[in-house]
Image 1 (spheres, helix red, strand yellow):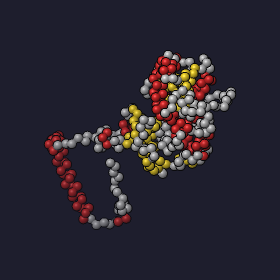
Image 2: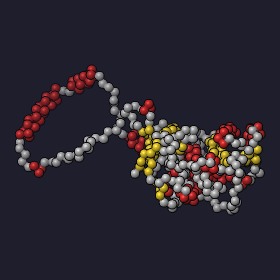
Image 3: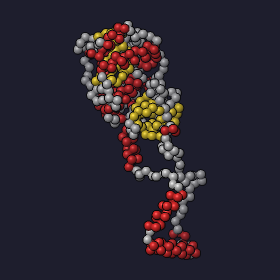
Image 4: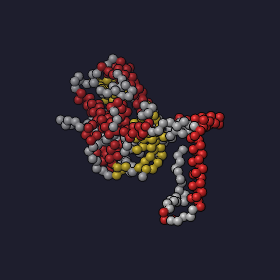
Length: 395
């Protein structure tokens, strides 16, 4: 049973009882160990079960070689003491034309931020944006940044770091292990992107939206360096909520505001769920007809349906009967239309039509006067229960 509920975050959604499999999908295909940690803390409302099946989407996105060594993770004592950063190249471009993304990871909380880039030389600009946001949010100063020797971290990036008193640590060339936190995070993000796109049956051009949502979910997932704690909680010091989470790429119906539709237009339109708003409360969704991202807080989710179901609905609409002319017709136009039909008919056809009507009237009179001889042969008329409407109407 699905129930409508107004969540704490001020978003109207449809809720229903959920299984551990559903929460696995909502959290971007989180591992079974991570799900067990969160389940023990009773952070999943309505979750049922604890065992997780290995799905083809996880196998497609997470299979990798076995590591040779494992080193105990170390952490700085305060947030913003150290930020790890790295740039990752993606072969396919996003809907906005980006081919790269850059990550920034706080060493203490392990919270991660990502930004999609069209070119590598945009790294300094997004770092300036990131720098201002995190210092304003925490009230603390960023002390150190660890990066590789890529050209994007030289020149203007170095100048900006020196100007703002930020120590820039460069790793030894061809030694990515020294920047292992950022390297592993890039792998984790890419694995989540693959799993989410595979399950949602979306093309690779949606990797930017999948990345954005994957990072939000990673920040809500238990972390090994945090001994099972959650990055977002460590970063803010506040408890986190999971009630707003939904399955990436699922079908959703978005309410259309009154000022954006005509009287006979549908009040909701099918879209594809993309993720969560950051600058505003609400959800991000892809409108396949307008081919753009829309934002809304009034959404009904169908989490077991994917983008293929949205496309199927739109195809049915497009192949339905043609548009009906609903333009008002004046009395003079109606009279003209009637006259055209009458004058086009030949006189013989009109005479035959009159004779046919007279014969039909005579037959009806005979039937009314004839007594009913066999009541068993008469058809029964089904009676509707009291209070049952003849037709359902929707505004």
